[in-house]
Each structure stands twice: as C-alpha cells, then as structure tokens.
Image 1: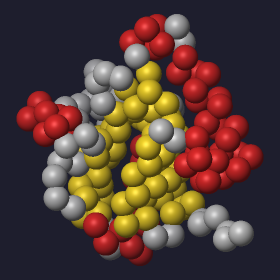
Image 2: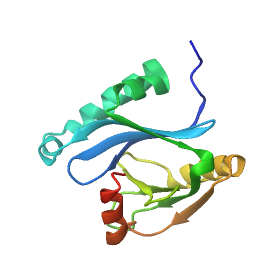
Image 3: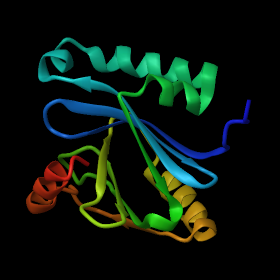
Amino acid sequence: MTPSPTVHVHVHLVMAGAFPLRVADLLFTDDELVVPEYEYLTPFALARGKVETVSRTARKLYDERGLEGLVDAAERTHRLPYDEVRKIRVSDGGRFARPKIAIDAGAGPPYAYRIHVSVDLLELTAALESLGERRGFAVESVSEIGFHPTTSVRRFLADR
C-alpha cells in the first residue's frame, strides 16, 4: 500500500455550484490540489440542516482514513497538478458573502469554492503563499465579494 501524500493545507467544507451545491474539501498535497466533491445538496437539504451532518461525516472520514477516505467517498474528484495552477485568489467575501477560494488552472474558468466553516483568512493565505512559493503558483488576497456573473456562467458551462 502506498503511503498517503502529505496534506500541507486543508480547507474543510467548501461549496461550489448553484443547483445542486457541490460540497467538497480542498487538500493541497505535495504535488497537487485534490478536490473530492463528496456530497450534492439541494436547497431542501440545506433547509433541513444537512450541511452539519455532511461536515461531521467528512471530518470523521478524513480523521480515520485521510485523503483517501474523502476521495473514496467522493462523487467526483478534481486533481490539479501544481504546474497547471497559475494563481489562487482568496476573497474575504466582503460584508455580504462567505470567503471564497478561486483556483486559476489551465484553460477555462477558475475553480471556485465558498468556504462554509470559520477560517482565519490571514493564516490560510499565508499557508497558501508559503506553499505557492515552493510549488510555483501565485496567491492573491482580495477584499471583495468574489462574484463575477460572466465568470460564473463560464464556470457553470465548463462544469467547474
């Protein structure tokens, strides 16, 4: 059995998409960003509080089985090698939105995820900058809502 890659930065409980919402974790490993999308949530599931259940289940999987536990449970997994990652933008969400991470990788629109847990954005940005210096990608911190309608449509059409 091959050992699990080291996870340098782990952002738990992020969401992408509109309907259904795709729930995932962002795992920045030695060689790539791994994004296991392990649950799809409808507005009905959100209203029933399913986010907390999904969060606890994913945390337990990660604690017990590491990255492989989340990947095995995932409906779909994105793997972005660092040589494809050009830039990561961390948006604070402004006054009205949740913080967001957008990953510019390869051709097409960025992968974008809203963070749905409390996170120290300065610490997260510093950790990503440190990793980016070692792996060759830029990190930008922006103070904005992080919503751009045309980019959102492009991301939807590209299934990102």
